[in-house]
Image (cartoon, rainbow, N blue to C red; front, side, top):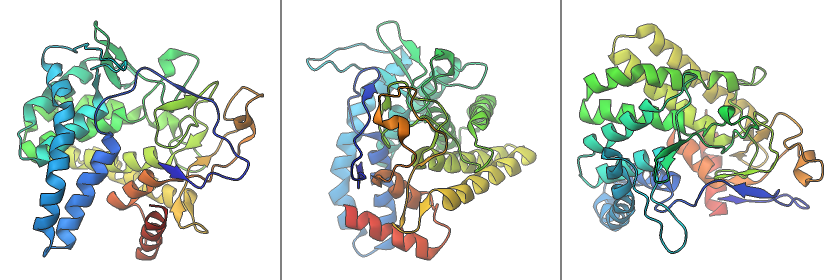
Length: 339
């Protein structure tokens, strides 16, 4: 969700890759869970009523994706429907909806193990993890969202490393599945290490391809590593935090310290370079131009994007990105005004 498009700016021609996904939006599901949790903690007198109100929606959202998560046990199911959707297995959707399902009281340990096992098996030597398996053959799709490249081997779905790390963290923290997580730790390390080649030396931010904030489209002829998105950089603050907890518990103290340092450095970089004081919010930063090689496109000359990625800023609160109470308060006001 974005607002405040600059005057005279039109969204570049966009291309959607693959088919539309069915089910609840994973980020909105995550935010709903976080907001529900925060609300119950902050408002003890009304927590019960709030839970009763939210619970049916969470249960419905979780049930939509359960069959897709279950499909990991025996391979992907391909069941086209009348509007052209498909029942592929998406890493982010599977893990976040398993989180939602867990909030309803269900045991999702086996589902998460199946998802992690399936996606880890397809990890490439450079650490790249697929974003999905789809089609009758269950072909792994490494994505083009936000890291589009002419050479397909460079394509990357920027959520995958985070979501894989988060799934392992849930298995460790919520299900005490320590032995399984030990087996997956090398894959977690490779996935996170693969991000470092996308870190901008000048700002410390992780770069991806320019595109509409928080969507699954990339513009035609987009140039990789031009833009620091609020959303992805926040995700990896969380990923390194969770990885540091795993490493520490498993006795890898040096790795744990490194992950904590990377998380703190990235949080600092977000506050230095993505916070827009005049508008009281975080916005994406275009650090490389052109963002597209097509000179006929308006986006070729884009040097800044002042649209308001609302969900991204909500996640900044969820993951405690603001570095002061004043900044957090201003951000909450900006979100409330927009919404």
